[in-house]
Structures are given as C-alpha cells and as structure tokens.
Image (cartoon, rainbow, N blue to C red; front, side, top):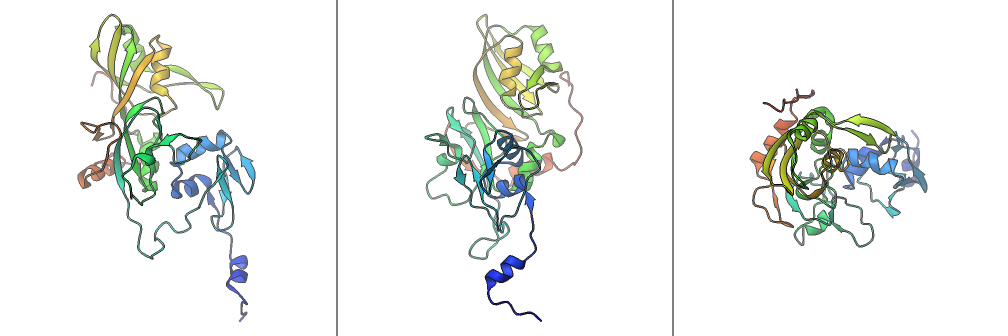
Length: 285
C-alpha cells in the first residue's frame, strides 16, 4: 500500500470532479442557474483568468478560480454542511423590492442589491429566484434552495408571475387581444425573433391618458412585460410584480421582507411538483 507524505499530495492525486458552472455559482449564492447562463453569455464570468462566453462550462470547485464581474467567487464545496459540521437549512424569504434595487448578488459599483436590504445580522447566503429588473418593484423571492429555484424559474414548469403595469394611454380591446395571444419580440442574444406565450390580462382601471393592467405570464425573459406593451404602443410608467406562483405580495411595504410561512413553502413546492409542462390557461378561463 502506498503511503502519502502529505494531504496536499493526496489532494493532487484525487480524481477531478467537475460540475456545470450554473450549479456551482448557484450553490455559491451568486444567482439562479438561468441567470448564470445569461451572465456567461454577457461575458461576465471568468474561469482561471479566461472570460468564458459559451456553455457548457465545467469547473472543479476545489481547484478552479472563478470570477464574476472581476470579483473572485468563494465557491461552496460542501452545500450540505456548514463549517461547524451541521447541515445547512433552507431559507425562504419574501421581499418587496423597491425601484432602483438590483436583484443580483454581485456588487457593481455603488448599486444597492436586494440582499443589502435584509435585516442586519442576517447570516444565510441567499439569492434571488429569477429576475426583477432595477426599474421594476414588488415581489422578489430569495432562498438558498437551488433545486427549488431552478424549478421555479425553468420554463418547463410554467410557474406564473403577475405584474401590475401602469402605462400611458388607453389600451384598446384589439391591443389586449394581441397581448393575450402572444407578441413577437427579438432575442438580443440569439439574434432571432420569438413569440411570447399566451397571457392572462385583467383591466384594473382605464382612462384616456392612462391604463392600469394586471398581466400574468408564464415566462421570464428580460424586461418582457415592458417590451410586450411597448410593441403595442404603450410605455410602462410603473411595473410591480404582485404574485409569483401561489405567493402574493399583499401589504408588504417597499424594502420590507419576511420569512415565508411553512404553508407558503409547501405551496411553492406543489407548484412545481408535476414535472411536465402545464397546459396554458386560455384568457377566457
């Protein structure tokens, strides 16, 4: 039997185990897996000093050096247990994200991040579930449960999101029908067009100069609701996410956050329990 002179020698001879960059950065609390994919395409991720812009990317958390936006990332090698040897507990947070706050864990300049608004002394590393752009406000979920995050944000599971949009002008019936059926938009990353899925839209209030709509979609493309409304000629003045799956914002004030109740966590899990695409609801249903 061979005897190793040091633990370093044993480490060097150990088999290399590589994981996808999406999984590794999600485990480190940087962003959800889908958000990491976009970060790679935008040239924001470097591995061992080399900027990577194409997937798949496989890394060894024990050996490789990963940077996001020129900042080194401390990779989490063991997600199941902390430094004290005790298992990590999953945390689920509901936040009312104000405008001007970024749903990213990577600091860029003087940007205020959603995690910066968590109560002082909060120790768990959590990351946003999906995206909510800085110009928008409202319901943002944060968690360290990577598996649930991946399912909640993956198009395969079709978890709905509802936004309240205040737009310029009177939105007419034909425009509403066009939005409900789906809008053709351009994909800036792939250079091709795509059609949005069917949407459910309800009118909250309409005047000659302004309309307020509740729009429910089952996708999560960048600034999708704003782009859909712009395509039919209405500029969004204010956009608030009021519902994510079964979770509602209700009376939580901007900047406030709270832990989800166990029944709410169970409802989120039920929303992605069936592992096949759900049949989209007709706007008339």
